[in-house]
Image 1 (cartoon, rainbow, N blue to C red):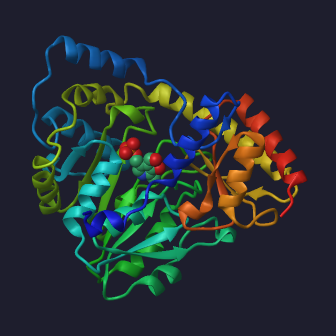
Image 2: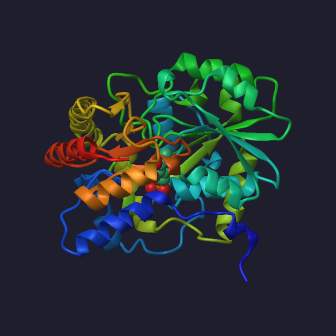
Image 3: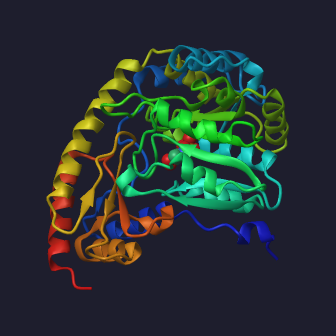
Length: 389
Ligand SMILES: Cc1ncc(COP(=O)(O)O)c(C=O)c1O
């Protein structure tokens, strides 16, 4: 009955763990959750006010599929101001979250058998989307000792005549790794002379600690032309539920193809959300975003310090995003077993690394209070101490 496409795809593991934690909570257990993939902050006031004003003004009709002109202008303005990238507005499409942008892009660009190089550990959705569209994920196993970053040699070795896209994500979910300009330039050199495209998922751009964020497309002329920059407001402006994502490309035909697809599928993103996104892009909420970033940094320092005090666990302190990718190999190399036992015995929810294509690790989100971080990691310490394989 079902199409082979849907059978190739698996359910999101992060969502499955959140669901399990919810069930325990409903049964009356206290659950300390490190599984959330979203900021625990409220959306900035200016965004809410813009949404209310749009509702009051009756801005409730269909809009242009790719987004209202002022929103596309605001995105182009943000890319210029913050990333030194120039795109005509016709090269930008707004979708229902970056997830939707990515799905659309794979849909219009992948043919059966195309290979997509994905450094692992990776965000769970990339390989599933690739498989759904008939492509083949080719995983590059990065090394913890290299900060979970793909080297130019690894990229070169992964490329075959079937390679169509390289998927990059910095700051990374799940490791928090942030590529430097030099590292990007070295990866870019490997691609020169090929017609390989690069998707650069820059969702966690605003959440970097002690390092500078680099937009991949800004690194060289060659990278500008082959890179599709994907971004959105979910993580940077605490707007996960609003569903606002976008991409920008140097190739207007890619934007036109996505526009055509989206016109037959979802049409425009909610008109109110489009208006509400304007202050989130023009610099009006920069102060709130910076406050959130500082709080995340404090939590990162606390959580990484506490984890590294537990004998048997260790973590590379991440440079960005809000996740710790904790090595649990000395305790239990099977991450699913580790995560399920931890949840059942201690009521602490983490996400097993097997879902991110690198075993022997669990992901902890520090998008939660210091109290939860302290109590949850204390319970993890007890769990590890008493753990019997
Ligand atoms: C790396 C990465 N990209 C994209 C997304 C999707 O974001 P959005 O809420 O805009 O669909 C997420 C969300 O978890 C993510 O972690």
